[in-house]
Image (cartoon, rainbow, N blue to C red; front, side, top):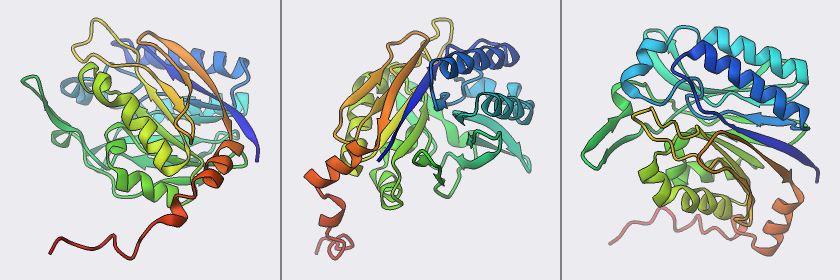
Length: 272
């Protein structure tokens, strides 16, 4: 079982998508220079998260995806694009891509669970803006098997378990938890999903932007299959590095063979 070095770019986006993408490319270069083989960006990495502004910034996503593909090829790394808002057939999708070292898009994922919440008198309704996806994305690479979900998806244990059953080693979770949900649930949910499914999770957040109405929690982190935090940021912009050591997955499964102990014969039972 091998290992690889991951870098999570917790970027503080500007209110200018072109400037933010340029800054993101600089962070990717820095991560590559420090030996990262997998680099990850956060959800909506190119603009502070704000549902009422997203439509106004949409239009250059395919161009930005091309620039990200170029830099992945330049440094021969795997690059998770976090997510951007793509317009397809007059519908808006929150989409993430994994680009390979040759600059080819290896897979794309559309956020399946849309975040509709009521927090301290404020309503957040992603379903008013985005169309949900309806499938998993699993990519086999020479480094490891990678799965993708986005932010709110991680709160649904059935969904993460599907990735475990597809033998995913590393689950990429670009996110923008806010300070309310993040302080309450971020560490618990990410560590819980890693423990129960015995894989690595790389959860990459936007950095806190004080001038944004939406306050990102930050704390991008990599969690190992035993629930150990392998690397974590604070609230400010930072690149977090962590080793993805696949032997830790094998060790966790030897200690607790959870998947083989599943009682599928009773999981469809209903109360009588």
